[in-house]
Length: 279
Image 1 (cartoon, one colour):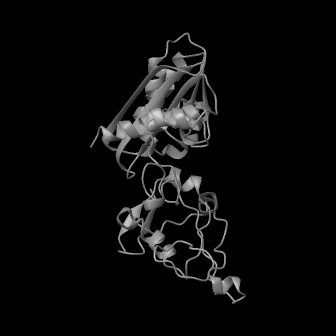
Image 2 (image 1 turned 90 degrees about the vertical axis):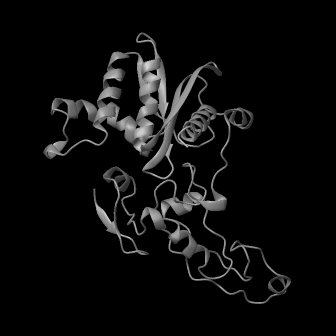
Image 3 (image 1 turned 30 degrees about the vertical axis):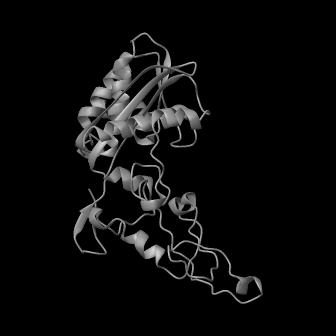
């Protein structure tokens, strides 16, 4: 894996090729021990400016708007009477916003990271009370780690006409995001009858493309990538690919993560539950 140097402690750290491929303009600057250093620097940069929205921060867009009054919390506390009376506000320099992987942007929905602004951790019952959108039939899977690598969890739920048919979750004390995402898919496939016709949903585009597009090529090449490069998580890739091949009526489809889809959110809650079993 590519190696980088931490801007805080100068130690070397590695980032997986798959992660870098998702964010082509991202240059990692902080190791796992100092991954919050960038946020601390941003919160102290200039005066009480409003942060960009999470989608702006993740996509490398947006800049800090003008601000005038320091806030003790580092958040925008609005204009003062002096400002509204016509005083010229102090304008901060534009905020340099980097493309960052999930879990590092404020408001990210990947397990932790994000301090006070991190997402709410909902139970499955709270998910049902809050969300109604999205497909109402299929098998929904999710997985993740906190931190990555580290303890992780996976979850899957089989739904028919908006009703839970079966659900399951689990975890691992030492794993990665991608292994948990793939584990959720494996457990979903191995739960299903081989004659069923159904869609299995995953919000991991990497896993979906691996099983739908790349695995058949790797298999023909003796389970190696072009140039003889090793395949990450090969044990799980082979297991999932073989299970998918045994279910000819199953379609594996990507679904956007945390976009208000009820059963994707439900699978996420199950993955969180699975993570907690490891602690």
